[in-house]
Each structure stands twice: as C-alpha cells, then as structure tokens.
Amino acid sequence: MNQENQPSYYSIIPATVRYDERLKYAERLLYGEITALIGKEGYCFASNGYFSKLYGVIPGTISRWISHLDKLEYIKVELIRNEKKEIIERRIYITDNSCRQIMKNTYKQNSIYPYEQKSTEPISKKAKDNNINIMIDRFFIYIINKKGEIPKGFENIEKFNEFYEIIKRLEFNYTEETLKIFKEENIEKLKIIIYSIREMFLENKINILSKATREEFIKVYDSCKSFEISYKGTDKEIVNFYDYYYVSIIRKLEAKYK
View 1 (cartoon, rainbow, N blue to C red):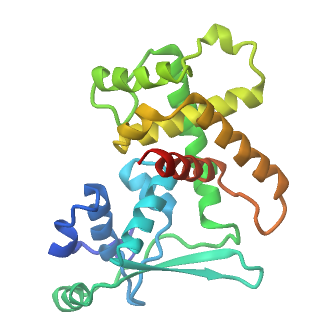
View 2: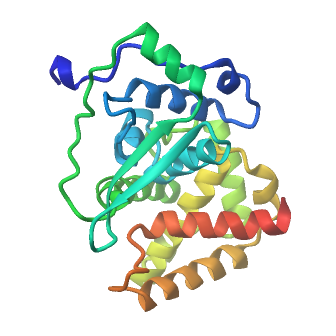
View 3: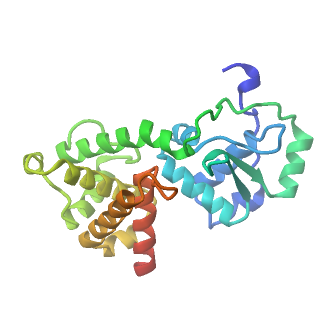
C-alpha cells in the first residue's frame, strides 16, 4: 500500500466514547479506526469486509458494532444507492463536533480508503461469500472432530469446553458418523446455528443462551430460510443469509429472555 492510500497514522477516541459503558471495548476501538479513515470528503467509506479482516471477526459483527455506534449517535451512517436502489457506497460520519475539530487541528488527513466499490451488489454480499462460509466451515469441522488448533476467539480449551457444554445442552453435538445420514441442507442448517451460538457466546450473551431452546434456533432458521426462498430475485432478496439469521435469532431471544 503506498503512502497516499494509507489510513491516517493517528486515530481519535474522545472521553465520551472511551468511558461509555454501553459500548464494548471493540466498538470503542472501531470508532477510533473510523476517525483514522476519515478522508478529505469528511467521511469514511470502508466496508464491513475491510473491518472484519482488520479485527478478525465476521462482517455481521462489524455491522452490529456500527449500528450500535449509530444508535448512540456517535456516528451517522449514510447509504448511497444507484437508480436501481442498490447500495453502492456507505458513508460514515463522525457526529461529535469536538472530535471533528481535534481531527482538523491536530493532523491533516490526506488518506484515501484503498477500496473502490465497483460492483452494484450490496456491500455485504462479497464479504459473506469470501469470509463467512470459510469461517463457518472451519469452526464446524473443529466442533465435529474436536482436533487441531483451538478456534479463534477462544483463549484456551477450558473456554471452548464451556461453549461446547451449551452445544450439548441444545443437542447440537452430532458426531461425524451421525452426519453421514444428514441431507446437505440439514448440515448447512446445523453449521449456521452452531456458528450463531458461537457468536452469542463470544459476545457474552450467556444469560440468553442458558434459557434458549433447541426448538427456537431451528424454528427461526426455518422461518428465515422460507423468507429467503420466497423473496429471491425481488427487492427484498436476502444477500447475506447468515447475518439475516443471526439478527433474527438475537431479536427473538432478547425479546423473550432479556
């Protein structure tokens, strides 16, 4: 990456963000990264895929962090669409006036984000195709075989075993032998459900996981899949099924158990 394409050397995280207990530490760090990517136009247009590679999480997690920052009014998100109403660019603005002034006075931001959105596809689709399927498959293989390196996100085997106890309680701990009689679509369902439980576990939603039932995960999945099939090819088409399912199951469980 040449000099003019690099993010700014500095990022800014004001005290209002640093000490806001409503924010995860990762969300505070992401805020700082956004300030480092603000270009001369006054906004950041980095994609979820870019941030997900930077922080080693799935694009859906980045999407939730950005939505939370937006909800708390630390940033403002603007979606730019073409004449077909397809998203071609996302612009993220910093809403804190004092932070913008500090950025203006302390360093000159002349960087250009090194990604050009040429496709008319919604931003999340390519990130999902390139990242999430691989991550889900790798994690599922470890769950079934329980061999190899501990998956990313788990500090040690004790932490992973704590997660696996949840999988066992929900009766998603199938063996490799059992899976041989599964249809491909049912294996795909199991993969996505298990990975969503992983995300919830790593986001410390233990209270919800301790109360959720196997039937709830399956019922929401089937409902999401039915919606995906029904609206394929329309303006409501789901371009990232995993993210759609994860948001749906979180809303369902939080409404019931939080």
